[in-house]
Image (tube, rainbow, N blue to C red):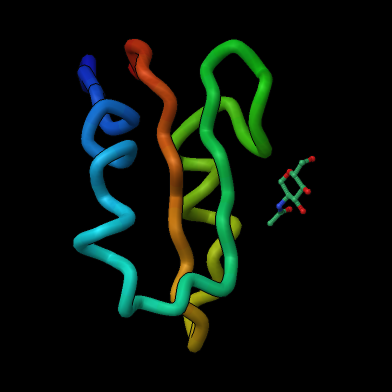
Length: 65
Ligand SMILES: *[C@@H]1O[C@H](CO)[C@@H](O)[C@H](O)[C@H]1NC(C)=O
């Protein structure tokens, strides 16, 4: 399954809409290795099941399979 994501394009405009949300944890997914994880699944798995903190997963543009 191929998942095309163009999230950075949206996130660059998101701060105004999300200003009231206190993001406490940010993880970056970059298929080229420039972030915390190279796959979306790794980022999802990183967040505990009983997570109580607002967490932003920033996915850089790319093709994730
Ligand atoms: C993600 O990587 C950045 C840069 O290395 C680091 O500062 C940050 O603590 C990392 N985030 C997590 C949740 O590990």
